[in-house]
Image 1 (tube, rainbow, N blue to C red):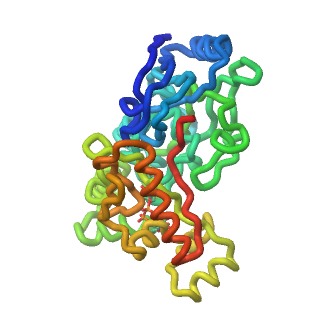
Image 2 (cartoon, rainbow, N blue to C red):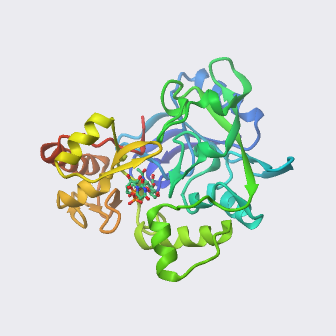
Length: 336
Ligand code: EPU
């Protein structure tokens, strides 16, 4: 385990905000997770588990606690009867897992190409894009349980996945440290119809190959056109969640002329659309740029502090509430 002291959170997160963290512990072996928790308990310090920092935001006063980062890497493959099991260590970059699977002609996660972050963070918020979610293919995860100080396996059903949620960021938040994740993938292709933007891209570019590698390429292009690369433009990805409505709420919203998507996972309003309609696209608020093409993404262009981000956020949230009566919910996690 590597122990670092007083590291700026702005240097550990893609949105590049936040003061110093008292300790940053880097885990290289499963046994070290227990040591890291014991270290924090010994000094009575709170713990925050960070991945690649693509979905976390630091506060100006920093974090008077211990940040633990998973540095364990590796992808292990096991052939099952009609599928392939991939066990991936949590410190592996998520996109390299997708690349590996696509190169092996395995379907199930190709639409999750280019999502920033680590494999271990993927189940926490049930990452999803272009019609796939990790909960579709994940079978189990290995964790360290900070309540019992033991290691155990949690099955998919235990994780209670829903839109951007699992027990890992709700009822059992901060309890488990993800050591590895296991996916079960099949050779073959994603079922049609694809998500609108993929269908549109295919039609415009006359694409006929829908194998995992081809879908990966398509998704990568769509994302590159719309979403800023967090390495070039500091952001934390989608800053707000889409809004889920009950059938009754959806009917009322439709009567008001709002566009509703009725998917298998429920009725949704595109939060990005609300932000555009409210006139925020491309606007600069307190050093925070509302991304022009994908308005759900806020870019830290010249914000001096978390406080600037908070001001920009309340302007957006407040105006959307006044105009439409919905409270936008923040998607990235705060380090506190
Ligand atoms: N929609 C569908 N089916 C379609 C097309 C659109 O259900 O065929 C819905 C979407 O679910 C969403 C809305 O229409 O409610 C707009 O979709 P769009 O593709 O424009 O994406 P978005 O809402 O801007 C979401 C994710 C992105 C993800 C894209 C692509 C959230 C908060 N954001 O963004 O994830 O890449 O869809 O699937 O769910 C991230 O979380 O950081 C992120 C970038």
